[in-house]
Length: 394
Image (cartoon, rainbow, N blue to C red; front, side, top):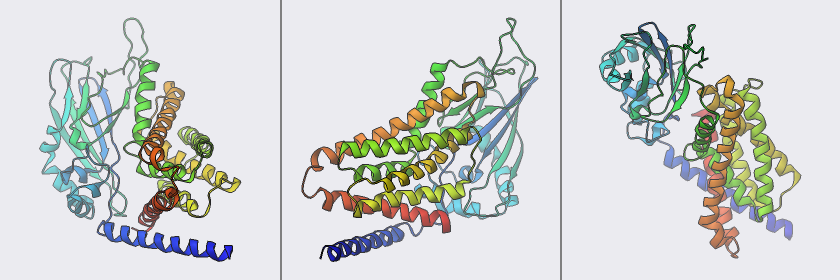
């Protein structure tokens, strides 16, 4: 009798899951081939009396007039169809369209000395071939800025509408101050609309450790809240499974240890796995931890091992952010640790919000499992399942 009840219980929730997936599919079925908006990269080379800037980003975002400061995915805007249509065009067409609008793009770029704005000149654009329209293609735009002297301090950035920007200084000539002070090449993650610190030809003075810690704490936290919806859902899946604080602590601890390992190894270059593999598996991990809540209430060794394995996957996802930014070798350990702590703060915030929203009031009630724990787990599993299908097939 008990086995029959268990079978009926599983079948009932399996069909509920199918209904959720169908509902989500119908709701998002009109999404063509949308993607997350990644930070653009700007590489600066400051030479005698000239600054060369190479931008690497999806130029279709600019051409579609999408505001990348307020969204993280092109499907979140009513201009997504325009964006998709541009991505489907040949690279030569995109280059031609951009060249007709390069003055508008230049107006969004800020390059100034400490005294005055500097004139930006467009040199070239190269759009990569779009062999797979499901993957955003990268364009390279080259600009040049003339300076009056070779020791000018450059302040650089772009309009917040173009989204976040990773800035890297990529060349360095022999350069010391009168006191033989050693300079570092400049690198920074700029939030939408933020301007760089003053950059000189030889680089910038080494950044204090406390500033590095602050910066990467923020980057790590923001990678969870608000940018890391997949990681948020995974943590919520862990939270919903736990009926005791000890279960939650154990799961989060295993997950943290695992993603710390691959975060460090991938950032150091020892491990490299394509996002094409990692991202679908992360989506699958979200579904799995949520679905286990339907038929298990106690933590076993198998779940802990699975969480550890999924933690390794999520660590690879975290590492991709740091690799995009490019950690300064002199501050590598400091930045890595601060970023990981920021991620942990983000995860803790997710748990505290969930506890305040449903845990305090409902966790001790008789209907918690039937009306909160199971339905929310089904929704999370459905979203993860859809993302898996989307990242593999769409």
